[in-house]
Image (cartoon, rainbow, N blue to C red; front, side, top):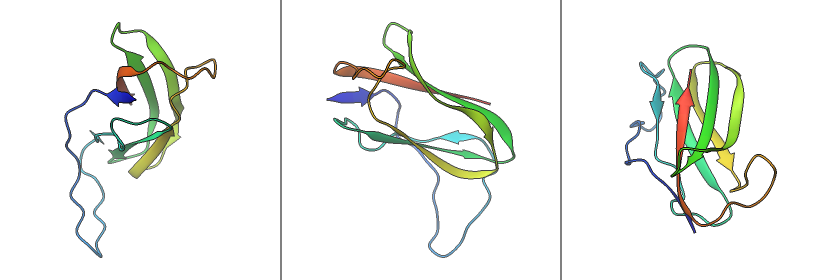
Length: 100
């Protein structure tokens, strides 16, 4: 099992309406803990270059999930639990960092 460390919080979405995010936000991953994969969601109020990285508890970068320009709105990225070399990471706590 793998658990990413981040307190749960997110964006409230009312049914049938879409509001452009006013701030950058990074949500709790789901599922957490996870075995095969987890989804990391975030929101952008405007277009930006985005880098989403996963780190272990020693502060070592495990993998860069995305590194690209993105449009405003709500986005989700799947992490399959592998490091940058394609090896499955060991069970433990991992952190993710969104840089814009």
